[in-house]
Amino acid sequence: MISSTAGGLLFGFLGDMKPLRRQFKLMLFVLLLMTLVFFGWFWLSLPSSYMEEVLPSNYSSLLIAVSLGSFFLFGCSPLYYELGIELTFPASGGTSGMSRRSKRASGPSLTHSLTHSVLVAGGIITTLNNLGCLVYLVIALFVPETLLNTLMVLTTIICCLMILLIVERYNRAIVEHNL
Amino acid sequence: MVPGIRAVAYHSGARALARSLALALVLTLSQYHSTTATAISALSINLGAASAFILGPALVNQPGDMSMYMYVTAAISFLVALPIFAFFPAAPPTPPSVAAQSILAAEGARQDASILSINATFDHEDLPFAKRRQDSSFDIGLAITEANAQRMSSATSIGAIKGASNALFESGGASTLGIASAVLDNDVPPLAFDSLRQELWYCMTHPSFACLALSGGFVLGVYNGWAGSYVSQARTHACAHEHNRIDSCVIDRSVGSTLSSSLRTRRPRSVGSALRH
Image 1 (cartoon, each protein chain N blue to C red):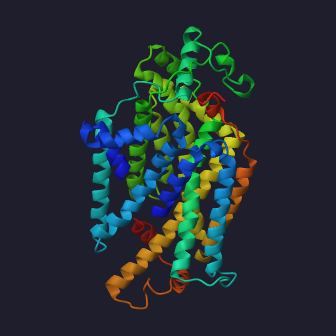
Image 2: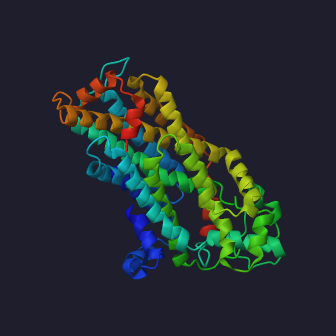
Image 3: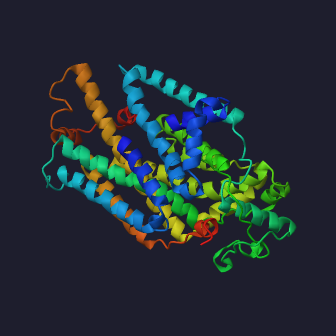
């Protein structure tokens, strides 16, 4: 948990660095690959139903594998949110209700629309996050427990490939930094 | 929990207490550090969950203490949430960033067809809402970082509360909590409900975003469930060790063999998920 928090903060900070500012897709892909490496190590260190353990393991090696895996995995977390926001940036187009609110001059109610733009994307990712957890728990009821590590590794691979399908577009950065 | 408490302390009148910290935060996190701000808010959830590992063993000594622990967690979450409902401003006094300001400017311009100063134009063809914005332009001014910090700390405190409440509603209410937080975080007035639906639809039908959200949501969610099952197994073993004095059932032995032996013995799932936090 601590290492994942540290990873998230570190890569969140790195994502703001100038050379990496518009490289979220590459960063996500690399981070997921690193996650895959460490979870793969963990997976190969433990026996499963269809094979014996491949790599030797002890307490500290497993701890390092899981810690570094979650370090990189949670490094993805802020990048997912930020890239989601960038992709869907103008999604704050208001209809009647919003317009009526925004007509009141520069009052605080104006900013309701911008909480929208940022948090609709975040809300969807959070919902899917919890949904993924739920789906996993349901699957785990029916799958023998020896397959759960494999499931985690497979999920990482699939998500890694899905990252490749994304077409990057930095709608917000265009406005923000006048690029 | 700590960033959340700091944010609440800042906004609940005890400004002197947290002012220096908040100022440091404001100075550090300008509009160029939105990813850092997101990281802090997203990972305060983890920090809340990590605090459960300290709070849990401190409070729970026997199985009967479990419900007491739940009540304590609920009380803490409630106490943290209370000042937010009471004192937290509905919105920052000034737009937190240039992008935010441009959205507002666009809305204002669309509303009364007043043209604002033209500093940046949008790529109209790419955007679904572009038709409505054709006459609008974007006013880019100075972003006031105080407001940025307010937005960020609101997200931070909400994240910390979510972390604490996640400990309560872990698996069962997970998706409900997600939907609720999506709606709550938006601070949606009933009048604007149409707009929210429209935005949700736009986001969900955006192919790249759908890919991203599915990938990010599922990899993190599955990790949570997966890690949780290991934590609960470790707890089950620790409990068995403490209460039955079974020396063979220890964790400080080679974990590889402990884990593999625990994998072969099915444990009751409900006990496992209850013990997770």
